Length: 363
Ligand code: NAD
Ligand code: GLY
Picture 1 (tube, rainbow, N blue to C red):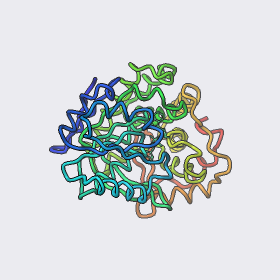
Picture 2 (picture 1 turned 90 degrees about the vertical axis):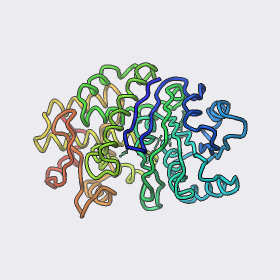
Picture 3 (picture 1 turned 30 degrees about the horizontal axis):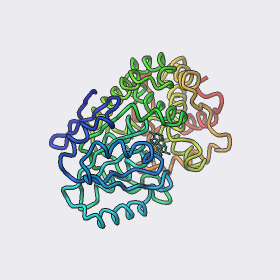
Picture 4 (picture 1 turned 45 degrees about the horizontal axis):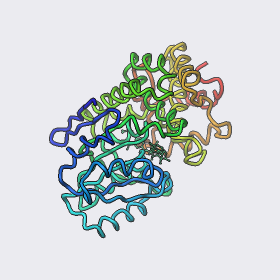
């Protein structure tokens, strides 16, 4: 097991990474102590892993709360249902919530923990690759508003994150690939050597080789922990984690959430960000091509945006993104491979070229 730390003073917490951590239970027992807990999970993950978790705790110590699976249930209504069960079970301030699942469960459970009795402890046990490298670390919690994704939420750091590589074996292949897009994102942001390392190990990573996964997850978590420690509330450097996301959110919104997995849209968005950076003269053409090739050829990610999203529709959707500030779309772009920067004003004519490039992106 490897243990990293998110350094936030008295709110610092460990991230444990390894294989078999759920069955072993040591990390969870240490984080929970003798406290009671509600385990928040869903009806896909529960049959696979709930018993394994409960078997490591004392009889009656934890009560499961099983949600329906899916992003469409990431709502205030679902959180209200959780409050009802916490109320019925008389969960007090000493109790903790455990999130067992992907990013959807993690965000909901984290938000319930942020708000129940004005905040109780929570432990994240992420079961998707995306949740292990991104959503379980950093304390962003929340749910969707019918008109916008993640519009309601709170910053509430977990007490502990436990990332078990063994649970990834049951993850659908498409979800693995989508998670790998977020992994690659860390290389592009500020670690060109990590990008090369990943590019050389695509087959092994896609085949879920545990040694490779542990190394990749640990490197991502170390990078995210460093960024969160410097900028917990996203007033600066944390925004770099949104590389590819402005384009991605537009694609997800235009196609109806779920048609493209978030990670797939992020891969597409990173290709568009690389293309825009190249057109602005910030990124060498061969580096932009390499980014596209690694994503497309090595990892099998989509690199051509949906034909039916017109340039105007792209612009309209990007302008309503949560990250727009005073009417300006903020992009995360590349000044080199492994050198992401925040760009507050981009020439609209150049942006239009990227949005129109389609199959020619990064060529
Ligand atoms: P998800 O939680 O929907 O999980 C994907 C699918 O895999 C679901 O059907 C889930 O039930 C299933 N699943 C989970 N673990 C499994 C396992 N081990 N074996 C088999 N099936 C399993 O999706 P996700 O990609 O993990 O998370 C996406 C969510 O994360 C979005 O709501 C997004 O907004 C959020 N997110 C939050 C942050 C943050 O910082 N809080 C960051 C990135 C994404
Ligand atoms: N997923 C982006 C962040 O945590 O800031």
